[in-house]
Image (cartoon, rainbow, N blue to C red; front, side):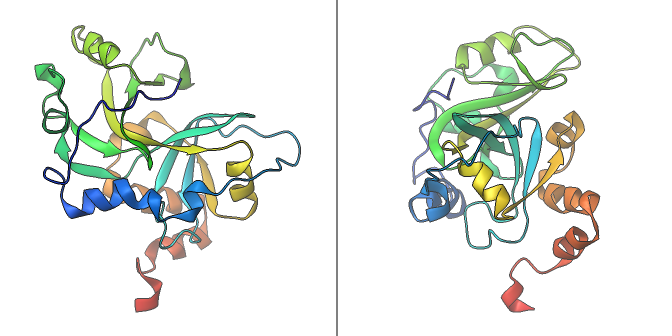
Length: 224
C-alpha cells in the first residue's frame, strides 16, 4: 500500500526555501521520472538494504542521500530517505489533531513522490505490520500512528516522512547496474539512532576505502 496523499498541507508560506526545493526538485530531475522498460530477467530484492549515492547523483534530488528500501519486487520499489530532515514538526504542517506525544516530532523528506503523503517508520519489540528488517516496519495510516501513541512501549521509536521515493518496474535494478547506488545492509541503529546529518559519510566509511575517499571529498567536487 502506498502513502495516502494530502495528509500534510505544507505551503510556501510555511516552508523555507530549502525545504521547498527538496519537495519540488522532482519536477526538474529526469532521474526521478525516467522509466526503464526492460527488466532484463528476474530481480534480486533490495528490501531491507540502504542505497547510498555512489558519486554519480551530483545535482540530483538524491545527491548524498541514504535511502532505506522498504519494498522491492517485480512491480517496482518504495523507499524513504533517511538523511533529509526538515525544519518543521508534524504539528506545524498538518491539519489533523496531533497527539501531544507527536507534536514536536520532526518531519523528514521521504522522497519526491507525493510530497504531501504521510509515511512513518516504526521500531518496537513487537509489530503488527510486516517487518522490513527485524523490529522495523513502515506504516501509512494516520489512525495507526495515533493508535501507536496511545499505547506506551519503551522500545518504540517512530520517524515520520512527507513523501516517498519510488521506482517503476526494473528502474532501480537498472540504476544499480549503472553504478548509481552503493548498497549496505540496514539496521535498526542506522535507521533510527544515527545522526542523519552524518549518516551518508558514516555508512560510506563502512563500505570500503574508495567510498571513504568519496565521503571525505568536498560536497561540490568542482570547488576542489
